Length: 366
Image (cartoon, rainbow, N blue to C red; front, side, top):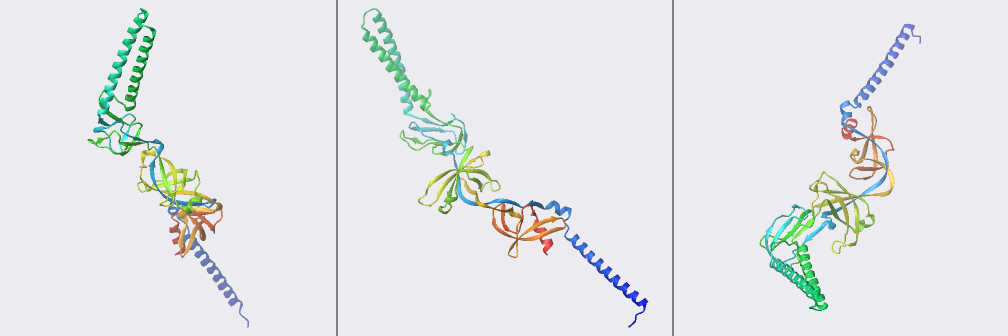
């Protein structure tokens, strides 16, 4: 069949126009898609981009413990005499200075020590006068030398007795008053108090009146289950959290392992030493201890908050550019509080979105 030239040209023109229109439609769709997935300046300011890093795999061990004062800086104050408690000048939790008065005890024993002091001073004075007289008589040849030697011995004994009584006064902190003053032996806080005004104290009382402790440094005693004992090492870094300061992490290290098990709990105790800045940590506070340790292998590590769990899988938003963001499935090996280790799905150096990534995920996958 023969087509006229005019009709042929018409068909060719129609085909060309169809191809051009189809091409324009494809470009329009691509441009719309590109525009749809382009991150705005506002969104860019809201997201955070992190880099995938290869790190040693770490694990966490969570323990329960409590805050206690450093035993090396805690002193119990006992009454050295019996009597009646006249005054109590401090309360539990007070900050005290070395030498500060804590309580006053009216004691018959103190009155007896005062009598002993007066007696010893008098005996020494008489002994010295006797020695002086004897030496004068010896010079006049009226007494033998042995009398002088005997008089000197009496002076030495009187001096020794006076020195003993003075030492008792020094140890007990006694003065001219017949009352006994209980003083703080160190700077610190009153962390235990077992005395009240009007209390009668026996001279053989075995209970401390006060416990004074310095809490600029404190300990956290934590219990370790038998199954976790092999993981514990001296010097392990520890993070301590308390109910009172839930948003704050106190960092220390394991400085002692008690290699015995409690017969009741079957747990081993460890000790973490902490600097107590601002005295925030109080004795007897409950604490949660997190110990970190390495397992010996390396994997890709990303911030834990960057992982999205959806449709029974874990996803990560891989960032290539503002218009190219990939939703990639990953295999998670372990998730810790701040770090997640990825077994498969990511390569070192890749960029991922770690903040507000769920907004980008929803925009791309709705």
